[in-house]
Image 1 (tube, one colour):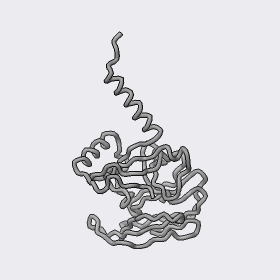
Image 2 (spheres, rainbow, N blue to C red; image 1 turned 120 degrees about the vertical axis):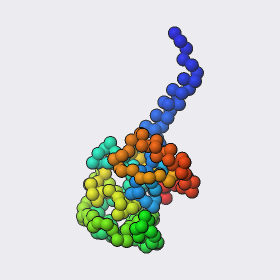
Image 3 (tube, rainbow, N blue to C red; image 1 turned 90 degrees about the horizontal axis):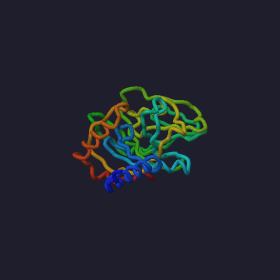
Image 4 (cartoon, rainbow, N blue to C red; image 1 turned 135 degrees about the horizontal axis):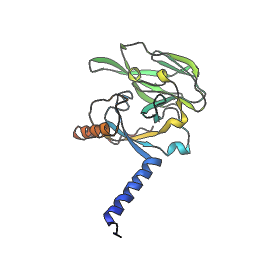
Length: 227
């Protein structure tokens, strides 16, 4: 009987450890689209804490990765706006939670790909502040929602790039069991082209990583996603 080489034993051990960590603790993802701009850009590579929601419940304002309810084979990333039991209403760019308007403060105007965008600071009822983007002249009517109650065990999520985000306004609530984990840091970033939300697999992932490595954005590496 041949003895297993030491290097092979070590390789197997490393693979087992990595798979264990990936299954229960931390998983890496890359951002394929601009639905979470300006918080997350196309080409940001993030780490997601998969353990945190085994020990606690998701909170309003958390940026979460989840299995898309329309097709659970596809992972989405959005921000939790509505909690179980909340009454949510969306009118144009305005969001209401339990009858109270979520505060928006205009902080900047800019041009992006020839389009005028407005940058706002949005403040949730729990005091969390972050930036969202809206087109000054949207290409289509904004989707209005509600008032509607978020069912128990579900969440209402939205992208920070409000006029370019396929989220709960269009396909409904996210079940608790679909949530994979909480994004907590950008570990690498590069300037790369966007992907369609359904064009995500291991091969495109490697391609995006290669492009990011040759077009790095060092100023974004290490940026925390926890406030």
